[in-house]
Image 1 (cartoon, rainbow, N blue to C red):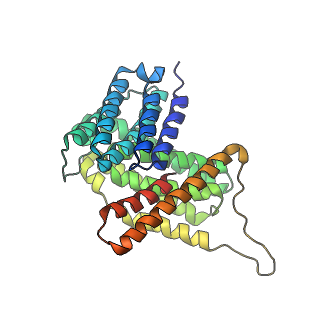
Image 2: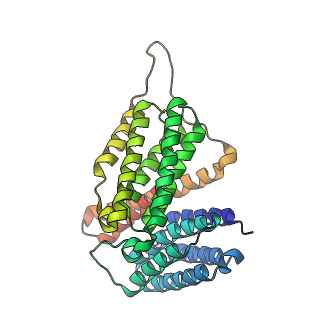
Image 3: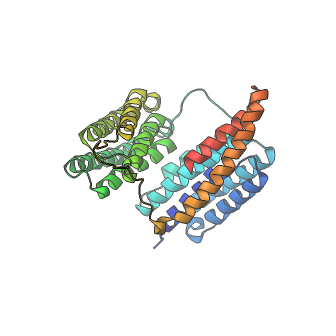
Length: 326
């Protein structure tokens, strides 16, 4: 039986390489393409004809974009590939049919390789409406699990296992929604995921207000999924700015309102890092982040004398995008 979790970890590693790479560097590109080649030629991957076929096609397009120098399309397809691989492998791990995801990537590859762009937001479901229940029903079930975990967390605020469970719900929903073009759901789930990251690290503590706003997010996502059933294109364009701003406001307030006892010398301590959990990765991240920031500083100086230098602007964007992802 295939060990898909092992390949999911490899997909995560490839995603990390993408986030840390400078796509303007031919050396970095060559390393990325080699890493992708190693990933897609794993026996269990190559033994899946549909999956192997579309990944081979993706590899061909990546090589073509590398030589053409089209960095925008290259970044778009690499980002999409990372989401795609994680979701397709998760579906295989759950013994589900991955065909609908594979078709979604094929459509994306065709759009990028042919240069066909459209101002109309098209979701996967606009082309494959019969698959809506296959997305909506599991997503609704995930949100039901999140709601139960939140109510349990309200009774036991220190239950880190429940925080992890809720985090996984938002993380999974974010990936599947983004893959299918439902950007409103993906964006809101991503913001909730970031909120859970702060809870997981202990930067802020769970209380009734946090439970309330996360339950509100779950309810909002439920409503968006109802819209998907009626009109996927409308669901993709739904405005989630209000609920996101509420999440961000509460997170900022909680982080800033550290309660200090004036009669004590209490100093808040940062979360303790477990060296067995990947301290080497943190060291590597810090070193590479410094390099990226130095690169950004050079571009900012260029921008100071030439405000219309789009390449400098793009380079600064890539630096922050890379650090965020890493």
